[in-house]
Image (tube, rainbow, N blue to C red; front, side, top):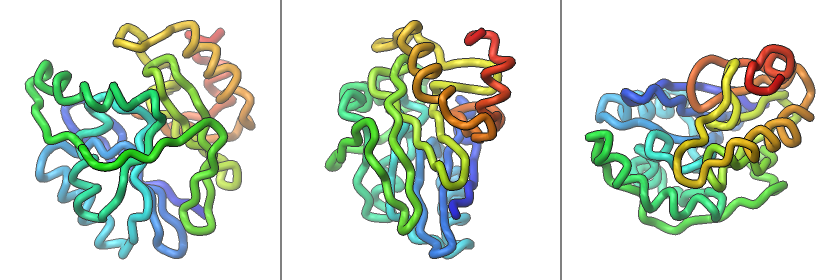
Length: 212
């Protein structure tokens, strides 16, 4: 069984997730830790729980989701997993950081590419990669059928959806992917978004104003 620990990091209020199991293996998804204090919070939780990080994943590579990639990679000798279409977004993230007056050291190590339908293993636990672009050209969601949750990145939020006015955004494509990739999941599936509170598929199908 996978448990989920969330952190809200940086002035952009991004949700960083640690998924961990009984064997104390964990995946770190979208490390948005920007300050030294935030990096310490992430590290201290991992140490306190005696976890062994085995995966570094990005749902997409906008700056607020990648601030901590380099830190996590160096701390735990992990390579970054993304969709190939996010490579350019990752490369441009430091320039976006300067625009927000938030300079940072970008991850520049080897990239491992995830494709639609790939099964990502955390020990004996599994996540399925769902390709959900629209907010960003290579956005992924990570679905755990056994534990009934999905990490949706900035595709689907509580009562909202990701913005599509950034380079590579596509509003109609985002709506299509939410309906065809996320809304087909069981209603009780919990949705852990890149920003804001936890919701579930049934609630969003019924109440999300962008998808009525």
